[in-house]
Length: 338
Image (cartoon, rainbow, N blue to C red; front, top):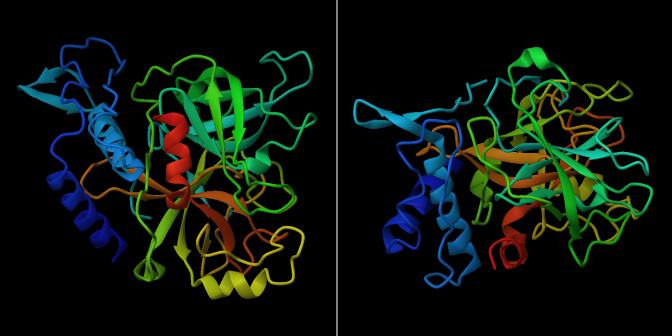
């Protein structure tokens, strides 16, 4: 049902917007793996949701790479097969938007980085993640790694690249340890060059309605595979289900530290696995809750951000809280695409 909603909404958006974006984002004569794209004009659309939507259309062109074959651009990406606690390893280039967020000591060099959080590339300069991945001077992110599959394994055929973080922008209403407004942007010190290993995700600009509760989404991350275990070195993926808001409202009602005002359906999503075998866990924080875009192979809508869950990961009948991306699009747009 969610896929049908996405198809109808996207069809309407792309056929009612008179071309708010350039049609010259990709140079079909490129002979390298690098991808160029054109920013959406701010003069044609001022609505933040329309800007995000049009930017996604621009990103869809980055799935193709020249030179052309038989007069047509070649699709250079990996689609998700039907099918993190209970997760399975991701494939090379399957989630090119995934980011690792690294922390280190005062030496501030790439050696000895501790990769503790996940995130997503949403533009050539910004990473979207959870605000609780920054908790002051002793827990400050310094690095972002893009294009990784298996951490520090040269045999995985990935082509990772590390970027320094130039600016940390938590949501102004976020206040630790509460998970309300648990969203943050990281500005990189230099622009990212897109290729088949590194490409941005699209932000879901619509409300997630009750119709979605019968559908599922995908979580990805390098987090723990079980409570108490070490974080995974492999990028894992798992399919989990949207659940009724009442499930999270009831379970987290007594947690006045992290959810002091109760579960807020305007800013949060309640998602879990009915079997209790699949869940996000420590180390997955900041990573995406995503759904494939039916019209565009290899493309995803980011619906949520991994935020908060039970102390024991993967409990039967217990769902986790994800920050609802659509609620924060005006804030994101004002910073990333002003």
